[in-house]
Image (cartoon, rainbow, N blue to C red; front, side):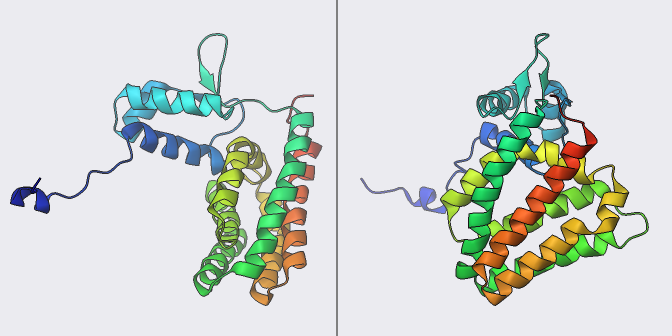
Length: 232
């Protein structure tokens, strides 16, 4: 059947639904550490902020509950789960294995654009750490940006998808490391590890990149566990 001339001028519809968009936005809040364990999420407020009706938000929240990134409390309130220390240690071990592998692959597979993205992200967080009054929520966001610049360099969308699923659970807890702790940022452990990873990837040193990411993840985890903010 011949296509009418008028239809040739019509742009294809965006295949991403409002529910998909709401899911992506809420997932990014979790991955970026802008929501903390125990934080409650109002569906109505989220809908207003996202500029959509409550139905796409409800759909997105249902998916995040299925992902175990959110939970519904006894009073029907939606909140970020509070992780136990045992669960966090288990998650940390898995992250070290998978994200360390991604960093090693990044050292082997990275392109010039990846090196620029990694270098830019590393420099931005380093600059934030040197400020007298750093923006701590921004530092949390910059930490995520650096890590995913590294993982994107592995050239494996499936691997990045797996890591994003891990960060849905880890992001809010990682939040406890940098946000609200200016001394922690000023000490520069994360900044130093990031610099080590960037250098290793630039030099194509897969094992050094793996070790740098492992040290970054374990260092943050040890600090969080030492604070005793997680349940037993």
